[in-house]
Image (tube, rainbow, N blue to C red; front, side, top):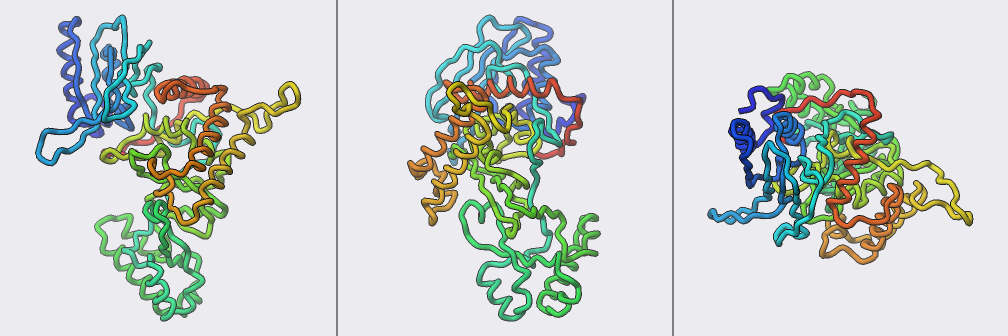
Length: 431
């Protein structure tokens, strides 16, 4: 069906029905169609593949039900997240978006001027999978990818047992966090020998045995690149080791959470490739990324893993339209600083961290469970949202869809001034 469409391997099967419908409607332009579909075709990389093709053929979205949960009648009662899209080749006089405050509940209808491929009342914008952010903010990447067969990773008990046999190895251990460790605050350790001088390494026979095990593991791999890094067995396949505090962003987050868990980590802790990290990030960056504004953007444009949000670098972060504010806002009448400056966001962001710190035994999973989220943290996030919204020149939004529509307008304004840039080559997988 999509033999003439680049990266068509990213598309779900249901998209073929859309393409086929357009083929039929082309012969009979008065026809209108509607499909119940998985919501994946309105999120992530699929949008940039499917919708340019359909829009180029003259498709217009007439009405849409945004994401709702449908319970299958099949055995096992699997819950599927769906959308409904009504479309045709003729423009509709009236367009309607059906919003779901609760994806398991009933919708309410909202009139729209235009319905774009993300099912938002905004221009027909398709986000590119970008290599760099559209705004002047720190680059984001993955953490470290050892390809070590677990030889360099230890539980606290395993670490203690290893050091008992090899005392000189103690100084080469560093805290290690992946997604689960970050979210649930449990200890894991990494034997990082990438900086270990060879004369010291050779004095640690237990460590040498681990290095040899890693070398053999890599040599036996079917992957040519993995075989090549067998020549440097003390190093990781991917290394991303900041030398100052950095932000950690959970790559996959539950659909139940209002906020993707984000936090600062010290440079003596190594992060795995199962989280995203932002070196050189400040309180301002933390505040903007943990705000409702950014999370609303993420929920709209990200891909999904099952029903959970999958945070991506190229689609979510690099396309996010940050507020345009000066580092030091000018003084308003009476001498008070304009609300919405970087300092206001930093102050509110620190208050969020302070609210978390009031519960030292609570994990991020505890703190950001919507049923367990403490009032102190809720209030801190509300204050942060006011500061971030003010930075965009807004006081409030009637709905999340209105918030995202505003961000699309901001995105369009920013990208219209950018030179043509390269985008990432899509892989034949959903990320």
